Structures are given as C-alpha cells and as structure tokens.
Length: 253
Length: 384
Image 1: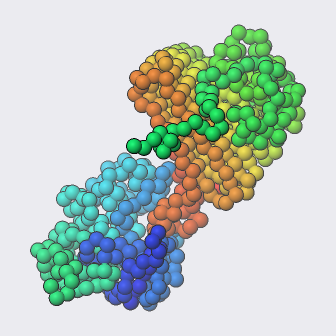
Image 2 (image 1 turned 180 degrees about the vertical axis):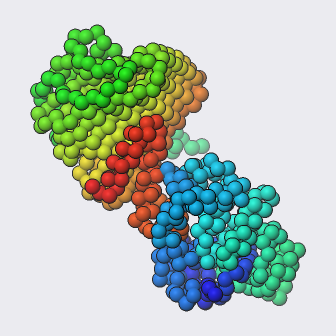
C-alpha cells in the first residue's frame, strides 16, 4: 500500500518584492486509492502545494518533508519524482513546438518504465485512451499543446495520466475553464485511471463543480497557506452553499 | 502650458537626422571595381568578420569551373553555359563587393533547368573546393508550370563567393535548398537572387550547419501578380562559427505573399549568428500579405545572435504585414513540463532544441532530405 505524506511543509517563493512565505505548515496523508480534494480561495497556496510536490525550481521548501513510501521526495529531481510515481496535471500546460504528442508520450513512457513500450500494445493503448477522452486521432501528430484549446490541453493532461500510470496524481485546477461536456469527459478519465490503477489523487480546485463527477473521500479547505478545515464530501456541499467567506472573515465578526 | 521642449521636441544634438537609405535604393553592380574596398563599417558588412575573408571581397578569384556532383532526375537538366549567355543576369544584381567580385570573376555558370509538372528532386554537391579563393555562378530556372526541388549542397573545405540566380516561371512551383555542411575551416559567401513570375511559388530554404564563416543572403523579387515566396532558414552555430543571412523580400506586384521564417540555435564560446530581414512592400504591391520572423535559441554562454527585422511599406492598401524577432534562452517551463513526465534533463533539452528546429525541417517537403537533416541536427546536438 503506497502512501504520500506531507509533513509540516513550509514553502517560500522569490518574487520581485522579495521572499514570500506561501505554505505555512501543511500536513496531509494520502493513501493509495484515496481521493483528496483541496479547496480554497485564490491565492491560498493550492497551486504552490501542487508545484512543490512536483519539484518546480521556483519554490523553496524551508521546512518540512514530503515522503513517498518513506522515501524523501524533496531530495529527488523533477524527473526522479515522476519516475518514482508522482504525476502533476498542470493548470497551464506549456507548448512544446516541434515535438508531436506521439513522440512525447512514447519518450515519457520509456523514461518512466525504464524501457520502450512494445510498439503494438502501446499504439493500441494510446488510441484507446484518446478515444475514451474523445480526442481526434489527428491529435497524436500535432505538436504538444501547440494551438490546443483549453479543453484539449486538459484532456491531453489526463491522457498522460492514463498512459503513464502514476501511483499518485496531483490535479491542479484541471476543471478550470472547461465547459460541462469537457468536464465530464475529463472526470471520467480520472475515474477510469483510478479504477484501473488504484492511484491516490490530490484534486486541487477552486469550485465544487468537478466534485459532482469525481467523488472525494476527503475534503480539505486551504486558507492562507495551511489547511483550515477538513471533512468528508459534506464539507464540499457546505462550501458550495456558503463559499469561502467564513474562512476569510476576521475572527469575532 | 507645456512647451515643445518639455516634450523633447528639439533639434537633434548631432544636427539634422539623415533618413536611412531604403533597401530598394541600395547600390548595385556586377562590376567589383564599382564597389569601394570593404572596411567592415558598411551597412551590409558591419556584423560580419570581414578580415576572415578579405581575399573573397577584394582579392583575385579563381573563376574556373567548380567541380559538381549531380544526382540525375528526369526533367531537371544541369549544364554549363558561357558567362556571355543571355540566360545570365535575369534575376538580380550584386549589392555587395563579395557578390560583385564573384560576378566579375566567374568563367562559366552552372545552368539548372526544371521542366515538367511532376515532382522531382536533384542534388548538386560541391565537395572540397580547396583553399584557393574561388568564384561561382549558378542559374536555376523553373519553366512555366513546372515543379521541382533543387538542393545545392556544400561539403568539405572551401573559400567560395558565389551568386545563385533563381528564375521561377509563370505558375511554376520550385523549392531550392541551400545546404551548407562545410568543414570547420570553410568560408562561403553567397547571394541568391530570385525573380518570381505570375502566380508562381518559391520555397527557398537555407540550412547552415558547417563552416567557419557562412553568409547566405537570399533576395526575392515578387515581380508579378500572385507570386508567393516561403523563405525558410535553419542554422546551428557552434563555438567559433559565424553564420549569417540577410534576407530581402521585395513585394513589387499586386496580391503577392511572403513568409520568412528563420530559426537558429547557438552553442559554445564565440558561436555567432546574424539575421537581417528586410521586407519592402512597393507602391505597386497592393493586397500584399507578408510576415517575417526570426527566432534564436541560446543554449550556452559566450554566444551572440543579432536579429534585425526591417519593414518598409510604400502603399497603404495591403492585406497584412508583420514581423517578429525573439532570441531567448532555453524555456525553463518547457524543461519542467518534460521532466515532470519522467524525462531526464539532458533528454528534455535535446527534445526541445530538436523540436524548435524541426519546425523548419518539417516544412521542406522531401522526406529523404528531412530524414538526412534530422540526422545532421542530431549530430550537432551531440556536439559532433
């Protein structure tokens, strides 16, 4: 049974105005097969948590630990983390001109598995996953994210999630900017990945909308760089009705 | 009430400003003695290492036949013609002393004639031209409505200055690839002049990978209605290499179109590239559609890339004209994205650089040549 543990995580980021503390002591344990929703207002540090887990160089961990089955994730480079089984579905995936989706997927799969996938089985897997995500086969020959619409970019992220089969996936606002059809397709992809591989999921979102299609086991409310409240699904329902105001209002009012 | 002075409107401290010379008024001649000796301060030479090739701009040149190897293709004939032949001098006139020196010195010209409407490819290779400064002249002519691809390739060592004329007949579709794969000590200066007939299309591609100094300056005269040029360039400058291209497109007839896209990578101490892109949209060129861009990817410290786009427009009635130029380091976000998918840093870098340059390779339109160039780029990336 795999487990991803985040312990007392403090993270700084360098800005033009100097160093800013974004995460102020985050504790979180995600077991294989669990879905944790992280919800919070803009600027609460949700995305910082996502990028810190993936190892983006912009963020500096000043205190705390991230452990994957007891292994120190913070000592790993970005690619080592991915090979260890971590996956980040990005909010704003970048374009890679001149690199086709096919080439990119095969290169990533080969890197993660340590050797190249068998051509026949791989081509079939890719075709099937793309069809499940209602992606036009012509997509495979397009350059990664180049000229993709917002919805296409998100589908491409979930395509990678399905094919690379990580143990834990962080989905950073995968729902933002999606119309309801795309949201359903993307959610189905996430649910399928979970059913197939039993991965653990950290679902970061601003809205409760996606939780209609992906059912979380735990909901954590993120405010000002730490978890302000935790609960089950019902907490999301309450947020849908009340919004984040009660966390933001100063105490005593 | 603010005064004009407060807004900075006052006479320039250096005296009256003289407008820069427009591209179409630049001096031209086929006779080297019409040009003053090159000092390196001239507009067309100021970014070039002129001392490295004084023999080519000022010295005496060997104008005898440059040995060529040609692959046969039905519908593409390659022959030698005398310098007095009327088919020479139809596409353009030298604008710098190296080109004029070549023109004044060559004995015979290579004449390439493309006929017939089916697709065909020929490659003309110049290999190991030696260390004697030499002059060459080539005329490539595509007959009306013909199609074809001509590769002009240089390998081995050379000290060569040359002119290449490209005459594209009415309705023809021609691709010319100038492929510089010279040895590390080679110097190659070339001016290409293309003249496009009515509704014709030219794809012109400059690929510079090898050579100490390589300067290929293609100019295209969109002389007749509906003519269309796609000018592409790809260069990879290693330590100590100077790769230069001055691209000129002259829109001179209604409804002409041009796309100029040059991409380069620079790697190693003293790696140097120059791109100057001039587009002139003349009075007659109503309905012009034009876009030019240059992108450079800087891979290490110690490199320098100059990128200068210029656009002159003499008519208000155009469809579109734009330019873009960007020189940047490796994009760390691309690197992060690829590494977050398990790809190692080295491999991710190679993937991004390959991708950056492949965009041009993908547009060549000859699978065989694309495969060869991809392999050549791999070798550059490996530092071979």
